[in-house]
Each structure stands twice: as structure tokens, then as C-alpha cells.
Length: 474
Length: 125
Image 1 (cartoon, chains in turn blue, orange):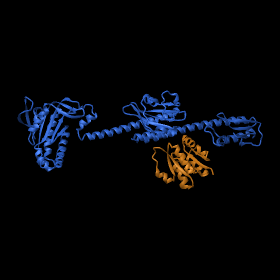
Image 2 (cartoon, helix red, strand yellow; image 1 turned 180 degrees about the vertical axis):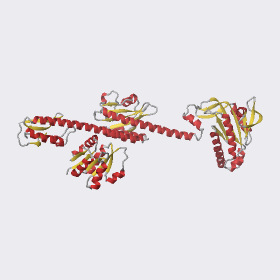
Image 3 (cartoon, one colour; image 1 turned 180 degrees about the horizontal axis):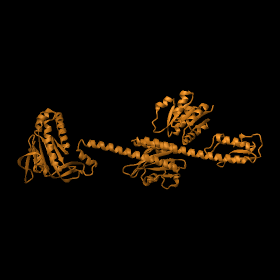
Image 4 (cartoon, one colour; image 1 turned 120 degrees about the vertical axis):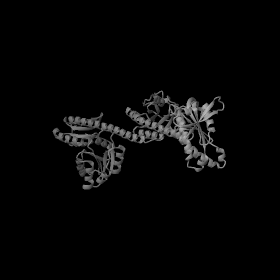
């Protein structure tokens, strides 16, 4: 006979060692006139032959689970059995509750292990929903995230009939929207009584909705529902909330990871074209760096290969590029290692800036060092053709110029504009192969650090005053 | 023949939980036996010959390994499937488990579904 979940069999009860030995002791005290029967009057223990004068029920939860028949002495036995049955029932209920909690704990253990290992949004969402279904009765459910612009929900994973369509709900709209706004989970056991409920294709009678809360706000919701009216309990809510909070953390982690990867990819791509400082400014990772045009005190270095065009007449284009690349690679390394920014290549010319986009101390000195190292490095390049044929002239000047993004909104060039830029350029074109020419501003700050030779005064196009020129001896 | 499952653990709540987990099997004619220490367990195994034993490892005096060893290697009682229960995170000595002849091991907190599934499998239900 199958028992209802809230019943105990009298037969099982009295067959327990402690109970049966107790009854066996008590029966002789009643003069052996007692018979214990189950609910169907089948005798379980005691004297079956005597015709009873009295009968007393053994009751549990308002139902009769058995009888004790005999004389008046049957009464206390019935009371005792009733008490024992109730006791047993309590124990069983407790055990059942405990097992449920135990299963929840087990579940949360498993989930936390699996989720922290997950960096894929769909997998996390599916895991959360699958695990929820194991403990909470539901016919449909979904996990939705709020998109970046904060304007709508989109479903990451779902189960149940009509959820296989893209469902778009505006935040604040419906129960899910509300929960995301307030950040508080809700049980709605009768959705039709709730004015916020938006009926859709899904048949829903009861639901629980929990927000996916991160430190700042809700990034979405997880909801589960039943098409039949159910009594979702506070315990169910607590469980869903626990799962939701783990999912939220895992999702936030996954998104951050995705962003990090994206940023790293963009950065490494950009760095092939722009100096890493410019890239960092673009990505906004360092606050002080700005690409907005601004007047700054910087040092500008121009370096150009003498008679480059004529030399390359003898070479195939691929060879030209090969040699140029090798040359540039070496020179750029020197510039970077001294804190300079490679501003641009113009043909075979290198333009480097010291002091922008991020500030640099002793920019004039560093530029000088760079120029000397560049010349030395050129003479030591591994490729013999380059060693024999490339000779560079370098011009360095410094002062306040305007540096920043110049151009149209659709194409910008990070560039420096000003007198000193022109001066540096003119110095470079003056310089012969192997020469480094600098202006007074650079000379003054480095008088005692390097050896110099006065060249004379130079007329710069567009400027009335002439410029003093010095050569760096190395 | 009535099939028997023996639950052995010195912690009362584990005994209670395992009993509760296997409750439904009782309706399929399975008898649940309980022991709270190693020596009692051994005696019950000898007299009742349960087809399946859930045996806790960490018990005072006679632990799960000793009981298992006695049943499998010393007394060589056949037809007894022994599952050793060990605490999660504890370094379970798989070699020792093999040595004493355990058939399976599970970590606590145990997965109730797994317990029922395995029981049904072993008892052929």
C-alpha cells in the first residue's frame, strides 16, 4: 500500500526495536486482552481471539492509522501509540527538510565550482537555469541581460515553450524590468493579480524573478515560472537568489575578460601603427595623456637618409623596403628606449618627439642621446649594404609648440606645429651624413654634458631672426 | 529475498540524511540497517549480509578502511558492495581504498541523486 507523504505506517512504527519491546513489556500488564490493528483492521500485535469491548483509534494528522482494541486498558496504549506516531512524523518531516537543505548545499557547492571556471556567457546562463530546475519546479525560465546602452533586455538562455524567440523588454517594463530596477527579487504566485505582468505567448501562472546584481547595478535578471499555479516559497526565492548572485559574478567576470581580450587585441593592432603612448591615450587607460591640441614644451628630432632616392635607384623595390624596415626597426628601438615617441615616417625620414603625448623629463638631453645612439647603431647594423650606403643627417630643436590631433574628424594626425618644428626640419636637411645639428635651446641645457662645435647662424624660412646652429661631437 | 542496505556513520545527521534519501527504496522492499560505529557495522554485516554498505571512513576506534578490509580481505564475505564515504577536500587515499577492497568511494556532502541511482544499480532495481 503506497503511503501518502505525510503518513506513517503503524506496522512500521511498532516493528521498530524500541517500540516493539516496549509494547511486548506492556501487553502482559493489560492482562493480554489487547489487540493492535492497522487502519484496515488487520491485527498486528496482541491477542486476536478475544472479542473486544472497547476500541480506541491511533491518530496522526487527524487520520486514523490504526486501532487498539480490548477493554479500557486499551486506551492508554492507543494514546501512547498516537504520541509515538506523531513523534515519528515530526522526525520524518525534519529529516525531509534537512535533506532538502542538504541538496541545496550540494547544489551550490557544485555550481560555484562550475561557474567560476566558466568564461562563456551562454554556458553560465544555461548552468544557472539547469541547476535551478533541479530544485525548483518550473515549466519555463530565462536569463536575460541588459544591453550596454541600458535600453533593453536580451535573452542569453532559456527553457520552456515559447522562449525560443528573441524577447525584447524595456527595463522598467513588466516584472522583470521592475526587478532589475529595484534590485530586489520577487515571488509572484498569481501573475494575473499583478498589474505589471505582461502576458506573452508563454502560459504563466506563477513566477520568481531574481536580479543579477553586481557591485554597481543589476546587469539582468533570472526568472523561472510555472504554467500551473504554484506556491513558490521564501526558501525557493532564497535559492534562486543564491544562484543569481553566483551567475552575476561569473557573468561580470566573463564580460570583463572579453573586454580585456578585446582591448588587448585593439592595443596590439594599434601599436603597429602608432606609438604605444598614443595608443594608451586613445584607449584612455592613463588619465594624464590627452591627444587634444595643446601648447607643450617638447624636443623634436628629424632624421633623414642622405641621397636616399639616388641610392635606391639601383635596388629592386622589395629590397628597398627590406633595408628600410631593418633601418627603421633599429632606429625606432633607440628612440623608444630613450623615452621618445616616433611621430611619423615620411618616406625615409623619421620624425620623433620627446615630451608628448606624455611628459618627459630632460627631453633635450634624451633627444641628444638618442641621436648619438642612432648614428652609432647605424654604423653597426648587421646588413652590410645598409652600413655602407645609409648615412643620416639628424636635426634637433626644442621649445613650445602645439602638439595634438590635427585634421578632419574622420582622419586625424597626431602632429606638432610651430617654429621649432620647422627649425628641426631645416637643421636636419642641412646636416651631412653622420652629422647631428641642434639649435641653441637644446645646446643650452646640455652644454656640459656633451661636446659641441659652433656652426654659425642659419636663416630659417619664414622667420626674420636667424638661428644659432651647433654640431654634436660624438 | 529481502535486499538490505547498511548505513554506517558516526555522525547522526549523516545517518539520518542517508536514511531519508533511501526512504523510497524501502517501498520497493529494501530494508535499511543502521550502525554508528565500525565494530557494530562488522557484526551487522556478518549476520545480515547486506548487499550494499555505505561506510564512513572517518570513525573513531574502528574506521571504514578497517571494516572494509575485514569484510573483503580477512573474512572474504562475498556479494557485499562497499561504498566508502569520505569528506570533501580530504585527500582520499585511493590506493588504500583499492588495497582494502572498496568497490566505490563518494565524497560528503553526498549527492542524494547519485546515492539513489547507485543503490538501484547495485541492488538491480
